[in-house]
Image (cartoon, rainbow, N blue to C red; front, side, top):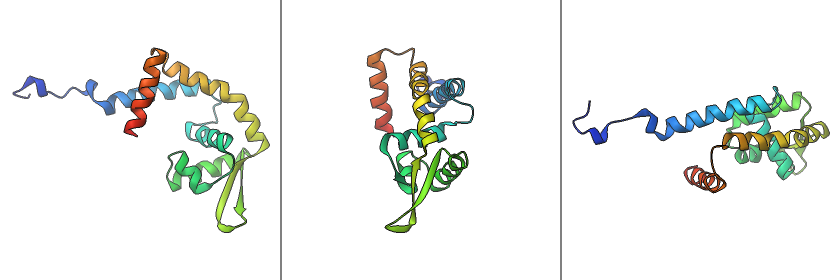
Length: 142
């Protein structure tokens, strides 16, 4: 125990611990509202492609904050389910261009209301102003 009680470490007050608990809560809500086969990373890829259109696999990884190995695995699994497709870039044969298939576009359009509900349920205890502040603060530390 510390000689100075003001400097005691309390796990419950640590940002990493609080963020992990918030993430766990969000993950449970996501699992309850989204299709069972759509993980948060798979959803992120599909949502980003719906938002932006075709992206190179490398850019898709950057825009969804996934490393090279993770984005490759996610792309492979979504391609196996025929939710996305990849084509060689006609200007650079080394680049894969990733886009939603019609099946993927229909699925994402169908589940976007559930995705909104996931966010709403995650922050249900916050006022609108607190939600805005939380988003700003979290973006600041990312």
